[in-house]
Length: 236
Ligand SMILES: [Zn+2]
Image (cartoon, rainbow, N blue to C red; front, side):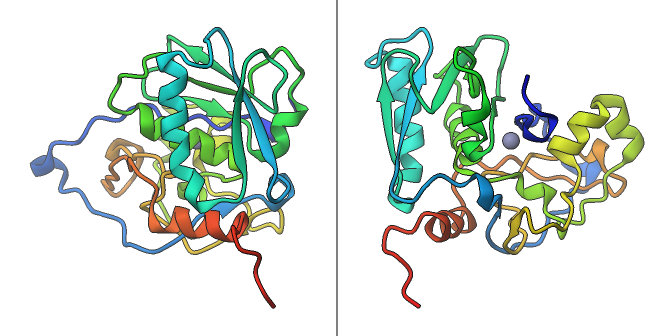
């Protein structure tokens, strides 16, 4: 069994854009960076072996994952090695019931998952427009990042009754609500543009707040990656 503390975060269910006139969406202010968990960062300059169940390493599905994941590459000192078979640090299962969502263990918590079980799931349709964003998000978790909207400074006015209607208490804690201000986490300034930020449906908030889904790595995501896995060691 996977300890509850390592339950994989899920990407948010796809949320429809609100009617602009009736909802008067309010954008979040801009700032930078991300939320990480240092105890689960991978060793510097290491190679992460990645297996994808049921696909040959040259299958278009695998190539689509590699292409999307490679966007993290220039900003980290880790190498992704896609391997055949199941002997890997990260094991990805394609799930046909997933649409715009996935799930992943955070960082080295993947190593706590028994062999034979996936550490990440992704939608099986790699031609979907959202596929790249989903891969970037789940690989962010795999690198050790948590959700940007769970930053304690995000100050998202959640409508608790609405959250209760849609999500279990456990899902709310793992995926939606603010993380505790704990040394367990590394908090850079709240970054609403992060790939690790969910889209937010105004119905889930008390102040009609709307946040669109981010599709690319933000400057904050890149800053976090550079700081977490620096290509050039920091000098004192
Ligand atoms: Zn997530």
